[in-house]
Length: 79
Image (tube, rainbow, N blue to C red; front, side, top):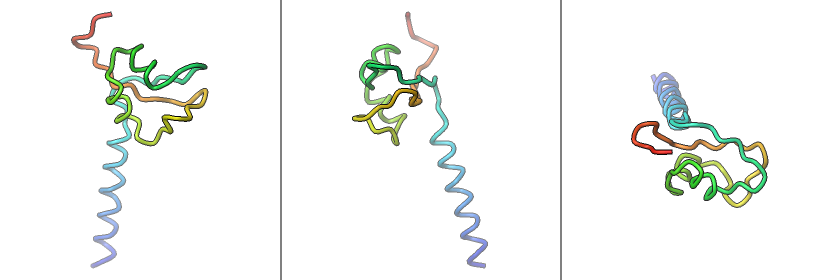
């Protein structure tokens, strides 16, 4: 049945989007003066990784209180 396939397809897309949007790292709340670059430096994560982890963030217009996913790994990082 066509409707059944559409329902299955919708469910699969929904699950995929939820999986993709899950932050595999930490959530950084934007403060005054933060940019993606300064956040990437703070957590020692390449800027492109921070950008890829936040595909729906307007990188030119961060707002106070915005939540950014920072894909950090606790293994192999020195503080």
